[in-house]
Image 1 (tube, rainbow, N blue to C red):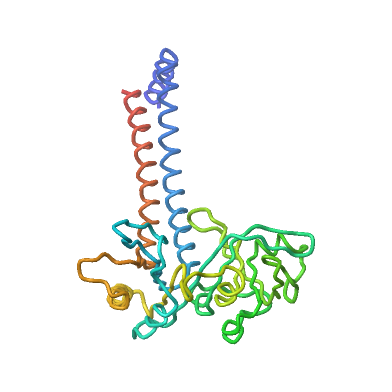
Image 2 (cartoon, rainbow, N blue to C red; image 1 turned 135 degrees about the vertical axis):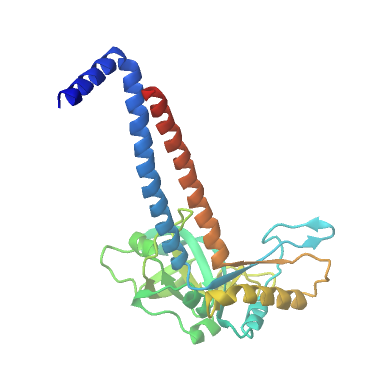
Length: 303
């Protein structure tokens, strides 16, 4: 007992003689331990956030984007040319493992309700798009295939739009909003999805039938051209096989020669998840490096 007490007293005397070194040592250890705790918390939190956001995108989703193409020797960027159509996506529904197809195009516009207005993204979509993306309704209903085919002036509102155009607790279903001074009837209010992994508000969105967008709101130089196509696979295991089949069919439909690059881009949900998880792992490794350096500095101070 006396030996232990003597050891403690000697330790305090040494600390007292080297106050600056002791303070720096303690600071290094505190920062190191704190960094380790932060590393674990942020790493686990990031993984959970990524998984939640990937889930909010839909289940077993494959995205097809109009890609680059060469025109008169000039290579255009993504979206620089019309290389994807409704007919392309409808053809992909014939792939056995594909359960649903959808398509969309979008533009930024102002929406108005009475004296309130909001600048947002207007999405012209097929009914299948809403199913694939896993959107759900809190009030009203989705627009029907008949409304889509007839280019009806009906609209679905995201949660952020409802909050900014209507009073708290007010049901927007049945109300009329205006897009480019054209009246649209609100047929449904969407359940909230929150922010995606890039920090974008997924609820700051308006959906109208694709045909309505094409004929009455956005216009088009090429009838049936789309901004993106979407497929839903039966299972994650079949996604890679579907991607290869999609590439084969689209190259054949677009009459691309073997030496030509794809004029479209195919991405699947698994690849997107891997990229996001890689980002969170990089953050974890960075914090681990900070923690290691801090603990090393503290250890050197003790020696």
